[in-house]
Image 1 (cartoon, rainbow over the protein chains, first blue to last red):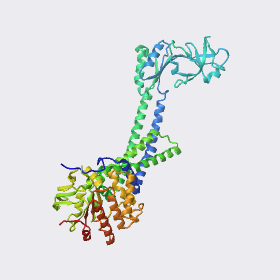
Image 2: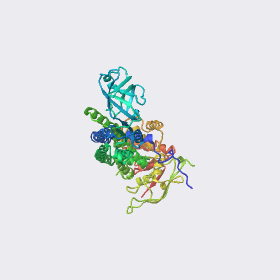
Image 3: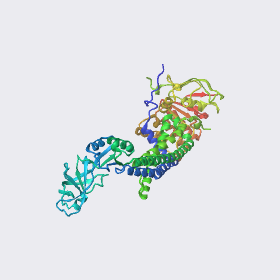
Image 4: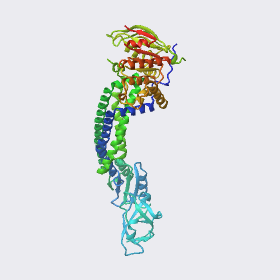
Length: 374
Length: 219
């Protein structure tokens, strides 16, 4: 039967975070050269990463945004022969396909003038089937009923409408009531003049906006599948598949380049931080031995050493980020904020991981051998 | 449960060797270091005086035998537990004081409390009291390089006492001191023993024996 020694500590492995953090901060100030070097190296990792990989990532993001623009994601199926193969049912089915963001039918434009000004300027009138909200935003007036129209805000003056209310007339004498004005939504910016809501009319064009450019080939097959094999051969298709393939290649290439460069920068930084910490802990062997003799456990020493490096690294990362942001502002470089934050976090983690082997070695060194006075 | 303050530090059948080919030290030593006593460990160079202190301080594990505090076999504990015991139950004084030259006197005195997890505020208060008592006149904001060797050794003693240890182990604490400072430091260790702690001093200095209650001579 043994009687345990009473100790005030509840557990020898307990991490006294506050004490150790304070001790790490004080001891990092006591060893300014090593702390400064870790700071500079971490700042350099951030700065170099952001000024090289960051720009690459920003360029990739810009290219990706342009390639993923609504206009680039548009699939157009044109019924050049005038056959009635793009009816309202096909438009509705296309809109319900997985991977399709919007689908509308657009008819052949006809010239119209303001019915109150027969000799006035002419403009196009587009018959549209499907959901009008997918094509335009009503600015004034109300949503048109079948057979009614909206006038483009930019063409309101052209037609001579003081207010977007009245009617237009086609060259064949068909009068179309105008009940408001609209602005088109991308990629339907070409629908100028007047848009006529014709939900039951066959369209000349089926215009499909894809949710994701990467699905271009699949969605194109699905849309053409709605037409049947004979009808599909009678239409012409303007496809985003080529853009999708280009998108994949560009994003892949830029991504691999960026990742490789980032790994190289951080790897070099890690090696240098490891060398600094190794030299520092080797030089301070008596310090580690003294700490062990005074009651520090090995885990506490490892924590102390890594927190010490972590604190210097955080300061370095902040300095590096601030410098990088200043450089990017002065040079008008675009850098993604999320990427910048991720690089700073990664640089701190890399510094801590690089310090870990030296911290472990210091904690496992025999304290007696360094404490003995000859 | 017995408080460690009342427990007796003892060694039984103690032997130690640094490596297989090295000489065996202590030869199965049995000894009791009584609480409230100042024990002097003496002997010629190489007999293992400092090594005995490191074994008692749980920095080295004996090759044979045991170190006990009361009935608790400390030497059998795993490394983490021995560290915790060292932090909370023991205080170390080294020959060269081994103060951190880059930290203030106050930080040096408080250091063991970091590892035992004692609250920082009361620890700093106690550190100031200890410095006032053991090294009056020393500015706690100064660095070790700005105080004398004798004052440094007193600061080292204050550091050893910061956690109110049961056992104070001093390895040649007067080795680098002049006669006046030697007397002061030994009197302070005597006072620590009088306060109830077990004080073990490894020394080759004969003057220590005049302060000691117990003399252990290693051969």
